[in-house]
Length: 316
Ligand SMILES: NC(=O)c1ccc[n+]([C@@H]2O[C@H](COP(=O)([O-])OP(=O)(O)OC[C@H]3O[C@@H](n4cnc5c(N)ncnc54)[C@H](OP(=O)(O)O)[C@@H]3O)[C@@H](O)[C@H]2O)c1
Image 1 (cartoon, protein in one colour):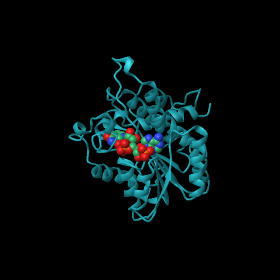
Image 2 (image 1 turned 180 degrees about the vertical axis):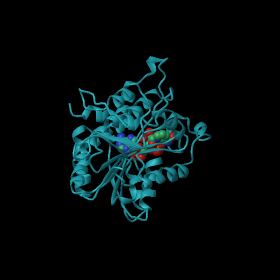
Image 3 (image 1 turned 180 degrees about the horizontal axis):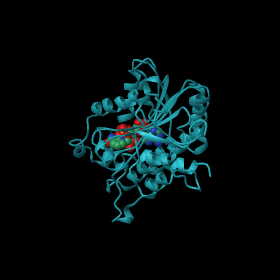
Image 4 (image 1 turned 90 degrees about the horizontal axis):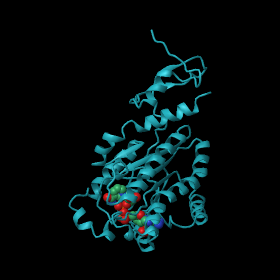
């Protein structure tokens, strides 16, 4: 016999509430439906894959930060998919965009600065989806990284620090806000779309030599979990790639590339693994060594966030 006790306050089973509050592990394979469709009671049901969309379903993919490193490699790999999507490569360096445009017949380019003013960014985003109404995926790959030593506070350049915060976090929240009317309209038409953030293994376990970078990526990771959960009832699917240290130009200006190049994951290996996750439609894609950090500290967190949302939304 199975007895389910309802809390008088929220109509959520007490066991479920207290397990969540006590931090017990969630049940990843099952969800408790708050009500059966006819509101006749509770039922335990296997958790369906609510949105099975993958990168291979997308017709037109915007990659922001496609002029170098991970973004360039992902843009070319997505262009090479058998589904033959159009790829719109975005970044600030025009000569790099011109070079990319020569790499594939379906590669379009747009000059794009994520640190443009709020109004300019909004117009840039609207220009993209008005020019490409089929746009059904965006990858937020743009990012920068700076070393900061807080033992030497006089050396901290707050302009540089705030630019890092804007590039890696605030601009992405702004762009998500500006892209969503388009993607939600597609959703109403029954069409899926993907919004994909690129965080880092350092979002999970910080590298104290780049403290602000890690905090921006942790913030973006947290936002991504919430955005995913809020949009779960729509056809807009929010996904996240957690790269490990990977071959790129990210560290060139720090002078650390020669040392890091002995440790980093080769770009082609990263791209292969990330593309496998994108093609499976995984919501969270920890790549290479990031998978160890994800396994140790993140596993189950998304389900917890979804559980928290359910408690918050439960009928009072
Ligand atoms: N490489 C790693 O070890 C590693 C590890 C974890 C996470 N990541 C993340 O992966 C992403 C890509 O990094 P990467 O390693 O490929 O670095 P990268 O080689 O330096 O490339 C950075 C890209 O971001 C773009 N970008 C920077 N500021 C921009 C702005 N204001 N507006 C538009 N685009 C801008 C650059 O384009 P323009 O300069 O042409 O504008 C470039 O395409 C970043 O989010 C990074 O944090 C990298």
